[in-house]
Length: 324
Image (cartoon, rainbow, N blue to C red):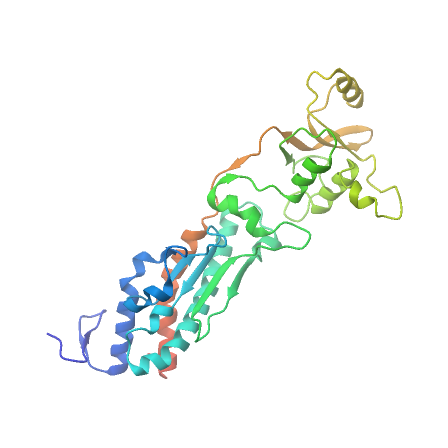
């Protein structure tokens, strides 16, 4: 039986009486008690209400803002049920541990991007962010994917289907086609990155600038061009939109002539040397994508593999034993 003030050493089954070492083992034990239940739904679990149990170092939970791509670590429960020394030191330790764990999670999530996708742009790789830095007063942090963008598409939006599976994200390019192109009768315009008409960027995919050129070329940017100082633009006549023609005799005749005897496939074509070269393929349905980017599992694994090591190291530094 243990005497008062003693606790078993988890590593060797020894009885430890040194108060500093005893506190470290106590905190390690509290962490181990909840390691198997790190994920909680923020809408179902109140960290302040549950903190009184004192049975955890902290938990990650999904953000209600975007449950598929935001992970939060809350260490409020860390400071409950401990002695005066621990209560003085633990707010600082909790904040440092949480912030360093967030850094490890971001690194793991970025590496998972490169493992999951053939091409990862710098914009996507840099879209991971820590939206709240832990402090002694608020020992929690949130790591997520940016939900805002300038002229482009927010990474959180186009990565969401890759995290959960489902309908592919509809970019601004797709919505402009649907709202601004006369006679548009498709559901999705699939880019053909291997087309001879493609202008490729460093990732081997069609440059964003060519999407804009194509929109101007098929007169899908007339509302913007109307404010320009000229009624002409460089891509005028360089791109043409071919809808699904069906039994429309007038359209059949027009597009058969444009295609030099055959009706071109539905989509956006670039005119090169007086010939049509397809750049985008029109689809009748919005494509479905399977889950490819395992955001939640990667974050949970990075937390499990790092949080205790980080806490132990910071604890020893705090008590002046960095090499213990």
